[in-house]
Length: 243
Image (cartoon, rainbow, N blue to C red; front, side, top):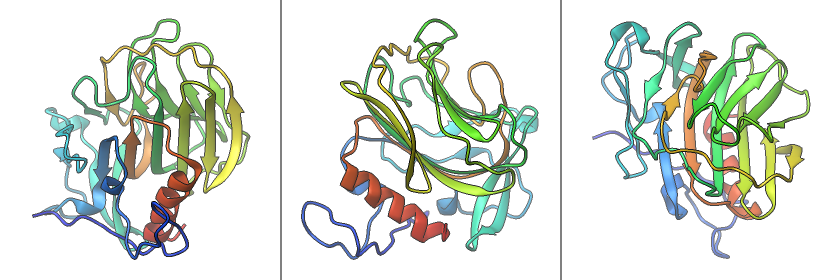
């Protein structure tokens, strides 16, 4: 059985109680949880055939073509493994609907490192049409969450070759806010999204932009977490990866 990580985050609260542990399934509406640390049976440099979904929804990320798979790299981030993407053609497919669609609110958390500050993406969904996409990538030294209009770009704080935990928050009544290592780096008030449920991918966007770097963890809820809940997830990632 794969191990499910849980971490002490005693400075945060859940439902008014101080927990001794936290893991993402403790909050409702968990849609997708890809956790490289929970994969078993892989050795250094081995291709990862499937990124398992630990949300309980069965949205495993798969890649049937050997040359398009990321490789497993152990002991990279606080003793933890990562999935390393080559920036050329590595990516994984998800079942339609794994990424929140329509105008669902969402809370997306990632732990990533890009080798260079380029237009490289780690999550994609939808189609290239007005407000019908939902993609997440770097754009130089900023983050970029685009819907194919009404796009949201963070302030310029990223550096090449550095790991970050990033939180992309969307409330369909108030708009978006992005947090990098727990600090707010920009807002956007648009609520005009209508993403289709197709073309769900990890390691690129719907128009390529293949990720060149490492992914340690992706957590997606199909609702807007409260500020306290967001901070709880961020503290889980901060503690786990020592960021």
